Amino acid sequence: MISQESLFHVNLITLFPEIFPGILGHSLIGKAHEKNIWSYATINIRDFAVDSYGTVDDVPFGGGAGMILRPDVIQAAIRSIPNRTGPLIYFTPRGQSLTQNLVKSLIQHPSLTLLCGRYEGVDERIFQHYDVLEISLGDFILTNGDIPAFALLDACIRLLPGVIGKQESLQNESFESGLLEHPLYTKPVSWEGLDVPEILRSGHHGKIDAWRHNESIKVTRQRRPDLWIDYLKNKLK
Ligand SMILES: C[S@@+](CC[C@H](N)C(=O)[O-])C[C@H]1O[C@@H](n2cnc3c(N)ncnc32)[C@H](O)[C@@H]1O
Image (cartoon, rainbow, N blue to C red; front, side):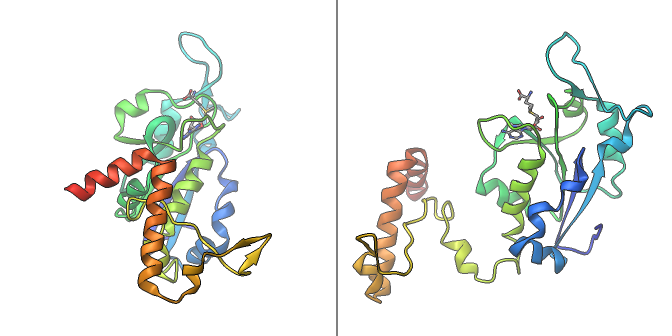
């Protein structure tokens, strides 16, 4: 669906347009799509093939395994997008890590274009010719850039106004304060010999907040000393 009236529009350049919206068509993100809070258009790389066999890639110069997406094909796909604005993003293990801060900066743009790689990747000259924001999902290798596109979009769209009912749910999450989230509990009060901490059942909001904050500090120090150091540095600023 192409709609420039939504709050957030995404152009997806992919070899497999049929996989979208996929998981993004369900639950809160799917409802937001129905409400036109966000919209997307797919651009099929294959439509810009250089021959009638549908060729979009070729072998690497200098030898080596795998195939590389041709720059002329990718350029034609990018150029086909009417009135393209906002960052052009390519998913690659060599990109900057996807973080909550990066997500927040991306939703400031009303439109993004995501180039989803396949095979060994895209000819380097695309990155020399275009201003491309390269983003990595983490230090591991996927077969494609479509999965990172799903992850990035889910993270972005859930922050758009009207997608998640309670804004409080967004504020209390990991990374929002620079700390990881405290442990969560629900019913039953006793399960397998394990009890919900007394304080959470006390109804004393001040004490509950203090307990949660301390637990957040504990889990962040134990599991992510890097985040803990950043948190302390930010507090001193
Ligand atoms: C098999 S991978 C290519 C890996 C590439 N030859 C390398 O060594 O960095 C195919 C495509 O999946 C995507 N991809 C794989 N792992 C990724 C990651 N960790 N983050 C973002 N995109 C990734 C990229 O678009 C990549 O072009």
